[in-house]
Picture 1 (cartoon, helix red, strand yellow):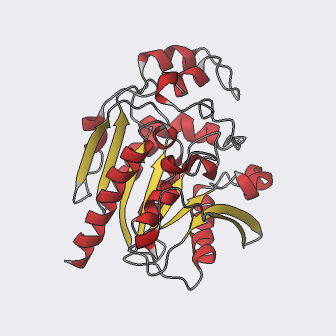
Picture 2 (cartoon, rainbow, N blue to C red):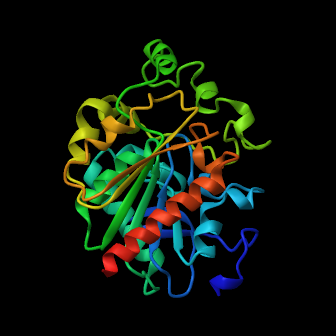
Length: 291
C-alpha cells in the first residue's frame, strides 16, 4: 500500500505497447486505487528516464508520486524510445497526440485512474502537453505543469542559438542546459543516462514555438495550469507573468520560481522539492474536481 512506500522503493516498470503499429514505451509506477494519473513528458534529447534517473531514487517523480498515492507514467514521447525508428513519420501533431493518448489507454488498461489525468511536461515536452490539453481524448483532464520553456530566449541562449547550423545542436548549448553544475548530483549532469536522439520533427516544433504555437495552444487550455521557472535558468528568460497571460481560458494559473535550480528541474538537487510542490498542486486539482 502507498502508506508503507518510501522514496527508495523502486517498482517502476518499463513497458512497450503497440499503438496502431507504433511501439510506444514508458516507465510506469502504478498504485492501487490512485488519487489520479500523472503523465510526465520529457524534453528534447532525453527519454522517460529523466523522471526516474538510475541511482537517484529521491529525485524520482515516479517514486514521489507513488508514495503519495498517484500512478505515474513517464512516457517516451513519439519519436523517442520504442517509437524512435518511426520518428520520420511523426511530423503530424495530431498523430503524436493520438499516439500519446493511445499509449496511456493501453498502458493503464482496466487499472484505476482516480480523478483523472494530470500532465506534467518539461522543455520541448510542453508542446505535446498543450496539444493533449486541447484535445482531451475523452479523459478528465485535471491540470497541467509546464517548466523549462518560455516566450523569449535568455541572452546567453540567443547568442548560441543564433550561431548554430540548421539541424545541428549549437556548440555551447549543452553547457547552458546544465548550468550551473553545482546544482546537479554527481553522475547526473549532461544527462548521459537518459539521453535520446531527437526526431527530425522537433526542429519544426522549435522554429514555431514562441511566436505561433505556444500562444495559440495555451489559449485553448481550460484547466488549471502551474508554470515553474528555475532561478538559474539560462535557456529562457524569467517571464512567468507573460507566460501566465497566455492562458486566457484557464480558471487558475499559478507561477513559481524554483530556488537553487537549473533548467533540468527533475534531476537537480532540488528535484524532490520541485516534485512535492507539483504533487501538492495535483492534489489541489483533484480536490477542486470533487467540489
